Image (cartoon, rainbow, N blue to C red; front, side, top):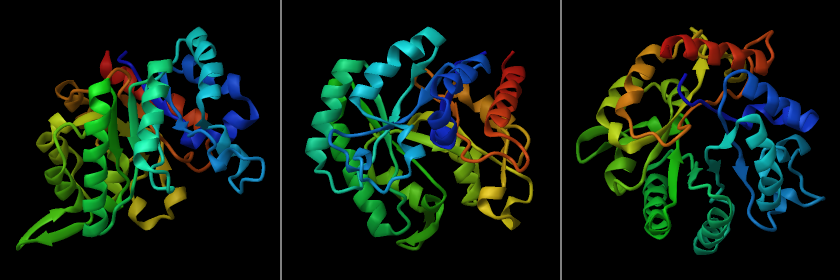
Length: 282
């Protein structure tokens, strides 16, 4: 089976309650890497009086946490594929990037993702400029900062009489060094054609997140509409067929499921999704 990572966002509660056993289950279910969130030094989210729910701290890893986790993960056959970085919290960009460079030198982690959830042209332009600037600074150090989409970035707009999506405009405004972590589930949720997009922008996609929604999700509450990979509306087989054409980094294919299907546990769904992908890749 190909390398398969797992986004940790949906597993925050499980990790808080039983950290090592949750990771062990992921490895036993066929995952080869995890993708946590990066915590900057002195991140107020980690302070004792932080309003951040305690379970979310389980996926927010600072340098000390990574140092502790790396040998545990290695013993289980897991790697840290990449990390999400919050750049919308007021931290000065140059300071944030300097810290990431130092962190990468110490850990060997080279791939970071950020989400800015732009839903207007003005926000889209600002996001594009930030990603351009960040990669100009990071790339000479062998580090990449990719963009992870949600659904709002696929809102349709009209520019100079031509219709496109905000994501189309973002990609036209950014350097080819700015890569995407394409969350295919959110893209589908936003009404965009996943396969057509992947064919058009295949050279810009270095990571793929698989997230599935039940057939009829358009008429369901969002948190109640998730499904195990391969058992919803996502064109998973067609996406897998595209993967060999993409310049994915190691462990760049990931399942990133936020909530369990109704009546299931998330770990059950992750096991089911990994098994579905395994049978497609043999």
